[in-house]
Image 1: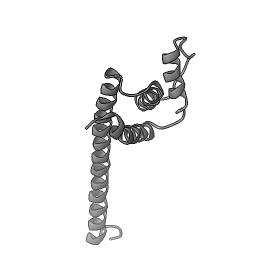
Image 2: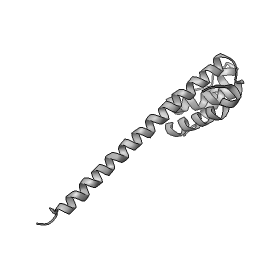
Image 3: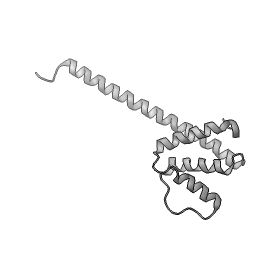
Image 4: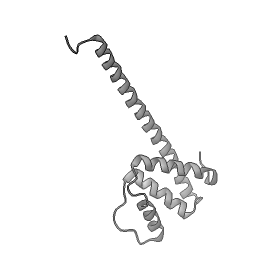
Amino acid sequence: MFGSSSAGKTAEEQMNRAGEGISQAAQAVGNKMDELFKSSADSASKWETDKKAPPDVLAKIHGLFQQATAGDASGEPPADAGMKAKFEAWTANKGMSKEDAMAAYTKFIDEKKAEYGGA
């Protein structure tokens, strides 16, 4: 019979197992990125609370965080100067994917840890 060889079935099973392995690896990478993002957010929150980072750094952090969690900014910028700077930092990331924004956020926080502290 055509298409019913045991070798074909074995190859198909191997491909299915490989696909499952890739899916599990992708999920593990996603979970690790989520952990790094949350850890970075903790550091950034402390910097803002303790007033360790200057407003321009906090604005960039805010912009990347918002892009990673909410996507593209919309609407008009706020009238408050500090909030406007954060909004403009967010709009600067327009079109960036959630994953890319998370990676950029985590990298930026990591680069600033020596300067502002954090684990």
